[in-house]
Amino acid sequence: LSVFREDSGGANGLYFDRKGNLLACEGGRHRVVSITPSGEVTVLAEAFEGKPFNRPNDLWITPKNGVYFTDPMYGRGERSQGGEHVYYLSPDRSGVRRVIDDMVRPNGIIGTPDGKTLYVTDHGGKKTYRYTTAPDGSLSGKALLTDVWSDGMTLDERGNLYVTEDGVKIFAPDGKAVGRIVIPERPSNVTFGGPDGRTLFITARTGIYAVKMAVSGSETR
Image (cartoon, rainbow, N blue to C red; front, side, top):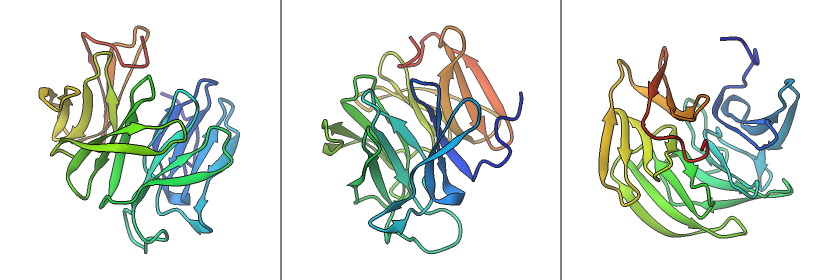
C-alpha cells in the first residue's frame, strides 16, 4: 500500500476513466473532481443552479464518458440543494442536469457496460432501483430491483449486482437473490480487479478484503 493523495477532500465514490484519471466524489468539498495519475486535480462539478452540492457520494462513468453521481446529505449541516438527488454531467463537461429527484437519500450507483441500464440505491428509502438511460443522460422506466439498500455497488460479467449492506449481497438482473459474502465487519464498497479481473475487493470500516471469484467484473473482461 502507498499514499496516492494526502488530503482526499472527504472522497467517497471513486471511478477510473479510460485515460487512467481517477474521478472522485469529494463530499467534504461538495464537488466531483478528476485526478490525473500524477495527482493534478480538475474540478468537474461543484454546483447546480448556482448552489453548491450537498455531499457528492458515488459516481459511475458511462461508455460515452458522461458521469452520473449521487448527492445525499450525510453529517451535520443543511441541504444546500433543498433535497437529495442524482445528477448527470455531460461527456464534454459543459453542464450538469438533475435526473432523479424523488429519492429520500440516494447513495450507491453503477451502470451496465453497454450504458443502457443504471442501478441506483436509495439509502433513505431502503430500496435499489433500475433505470433505462437515454443518450442525453435522462432516465426512464424506474423499476424496483430489491428492498435492500447499498453503499457502493458493482456488477459481474453475468449482470449480477453486488450490494454492500449486511455483508455483500448478490442479485440477478431480475432481482432474485443469488448469493451473499460474509466478512468480519460491515462492508462499504466493492469492486472487481486483479490481473484477471476475478478478485472482488471489499472495503469495510477498518479493513480491505479480497475474495477470489469464479466470475470477473463486468468491465474487467
